[in-house]
Image (cartoon, rainbow over all chains, first blue to last red; front, side, top):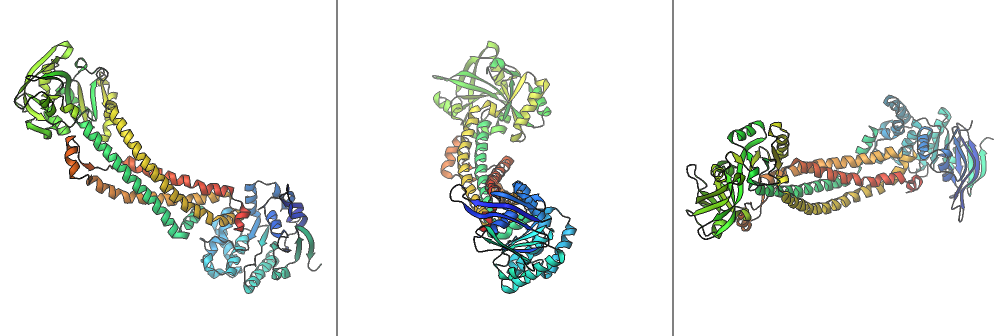
Length: 229
Length: 407
């Protein structure tokens, strides 16, 4: 069963006047354990597609099914709760909570979920060690480099064991070394722990590592290529 | 716990801004307390000055006297009754008996309508210090009778110390009341109307004059603490053995004074409202900046799964903590200041002293430490801040997550 499935998905702005098709009739499925990139020029609809899949936006028409749930039919609070429990987010600008330490940021979602403190501690510490941040656990975001912040963001997204992770241009603000480091970590988590990743990106470094590349142009699906096939 | 931790940490992410907000709340509380304390202090002094020379804080009358204030409705109240009242109600410090009626007051040539008041000189002086206002003669000698009259009345009747005056009128149950008294003292009564009409007699003299033995028109109850006057009146009125009597507070006896105070308070309220508005906008400015600065963060938090309600709770807690600290510190700072002014009231200057003394008032701006002021002002400032927090709450409720994330 696909973890994400969209069917005849449309996002149209100004439908009554001059319609703009941000997402134009996209039907696509993403399977578990995939490491997929959504690529395309600016304005092609990458971020809009990810927002629709992540329940941050509502489609004009069509359906979005995530882990067997129709999120396009959910109320706003249901979608927020769904995101909390099923989707991990990694943003372009890291978006950590500035007043919390790396550990607290990473543990934040599990705490929102109300998980026991012991479980949170074990899970978060293990992940922070995996991404090489065991010595920066007590540092605030302002004391971390961009790469370190993004690794904390990845741990935050992963900690609650979501069905998949949506990453919107995660390497766009990183230097080459940090970007490669982050991609290595995400690739390893994908291969070793079976975490599903869905990126939107322009970054060739990400595209090179992806197992599948979905190309959008003008809101529509142009290519869907799986490497090795 | 997570939300409290987040709120607390958020507060100190910009220490300067937080302290500015707290300071504005502190300033508001101090200023509001200062104004209100001064207002209450002045009113308490006004009540004290007025009440002690007129009705007293509380008094007992015959049940009919309030509607028909004449001697026929004077109550039976001998020494034993007065002693029993003091003993029965622990809130009472002492009592001040009065037997009063309007009479014709005649000198050698002129006559006037006067107000004859039979008093217990010792208790009367204890209550209002009337003896200190004596201009000539003495304020009754236990052995001798005589009358002490207002200086203005003496002037109007062309009378002076040692002269005689005749009182003529109606006594108890239609009896004729007439008597001739030597003026033993001239007193400057602080209430001008009384100063031109008052004739003090010793109580037993007045009872003899009015043929109203063991009777009083009213008995002033002096409470141990002035703020207990209402409690005392309620207790007296609830006492079954006093069913033929009725106790009143000064507010019931002097509705015009209550109106004056209400008018005075309305004036202060306008000042306070202006203060509340200024302070309110000050706090709002900070909250507005804080909200707009953090919209991207709010958007991110909602994106990763934080319900708007929980996010609003965090912001609410932040404002709650700021306001609680501000109000608490404001009260703590204001309290010693007000205590100082309570014991060292602001002097209005030598120029006013003489003029105000004429009216039995001190030329000071007194302060009050009435607990009600602290509770009221703290709650109002706190309430204003809590209204202001509605802005970020509404903002969070309406936040467009995608737009906020793009900021």
